[in-house]
Length: 598
Image (tube, rainbow, N blue to C red):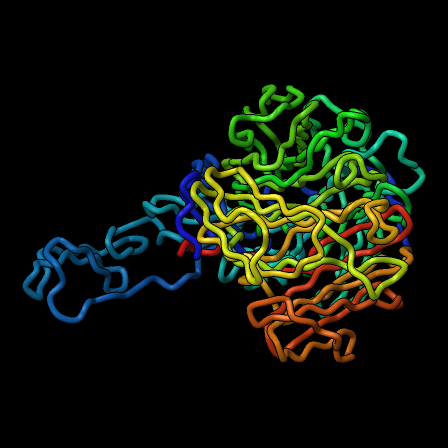
């Protein structure tokens, strides 16, 4: 069961948003796209416990009239004395006896509880592509959202407000319209001819226009037909990939990807199968919050290679507060962060703060708190798992917001290669988001069952066990493939987050990189579930515990690399590729609902 977060009071506000295999290489050209720092989301994303409102300026005029209907309310029976109700544009003050002690004819509008106003609070009008929203006092229209054409949005001059496919995505999930692909730290001997890339899968029923910028430069613009995938290679960002520290703030270091229809986005670091790979399922901006617990891996002292996490801002003047794990950890200071992993930074749109561990340090269990929504990617430049077992590989995962975590997860090993009938061992880390977290394993595991402090974690080493984790508070569960010479097949480390059971879906569109030797999907579902992948029934399920089973499915190459999955019940999926001394691994998808404490 999940109880309240002791370290973070959650102030949550929900928001709406806001396939071919040919590679498209971007080129840098000027663009008339939205200026850096201009918000293009279609609503306030979930925010953190730190005050998140941005200053607004009063604007009393617009190019269209507000057309929202003015409430006309007269409560049945006597209303409380002094309460203001509206009858059209007539403001009436209740006398508590069924009558009114005062009535005023309003020249503009009447708002219940307020009386005569210049505009009804919450109503909208348009000023070109800018949405204007009447303030809570009803005194003026103030700037709202920018209805970004690159997100397929326009401002509705009749009803007011942004409209378009990206304005009404419905529930929060991995499918969205705006993303921030981010180059992550790589081993300096890495082959720079193997490109950084994103794969964009069109989840809509119509063609999407995708625009990628960095700062105010246009990098690429492509169309992605319905049910198609486009792979776009992007230039490496030197300040994000080279060296091994210190902690640094790269201005405009991230790419910004906007689509006119809902899409899913995966980043590959790098794209082609080789040594030192991993990949991330990117999360759309409308699902970001200001609260994260970090998963990384320990500093590799023999080769002076650090673990890291990267914080990316989508808005100007984002205040980010960083907290090292309990007791702090050895950190390469810089960018406002001290030698124990704590500090503060001010980020603008597209800025990237990369925090690096130092000798003996492990950033796992650090916390990120921001006053505006941010993206956090955790990983390692190149590491062995466990340290001392050849060979090293790059790690990265776009981390789930803390508010989307729960206490219930399933853990199961991936397959080996070349003998796919066998399974590959992983290290499992269960990271506490709160103090005094209690755990139960089904079936039972030889592992600790209590975590004393938020940020501490339990590590289960070299395991091929299948089991369920039940925690009484929120936890983050992460798996790491072991290195090739650990004796479990020919692939090297990659990391993946286990998906909370409460965030499972009944349908997915997943992408498997066709350039890899083999690709797999691991599917976890209730016993007896009917699941199809590309129209074919999935078989071969084996029990994983607590009434659920798991199946390994090799994904054949398709024309686009995309695969469609559906079921009569909700299920979980992860996707990975393996080869000699290389691997990538990411969740196949998930919902990202903000889960209430229990």
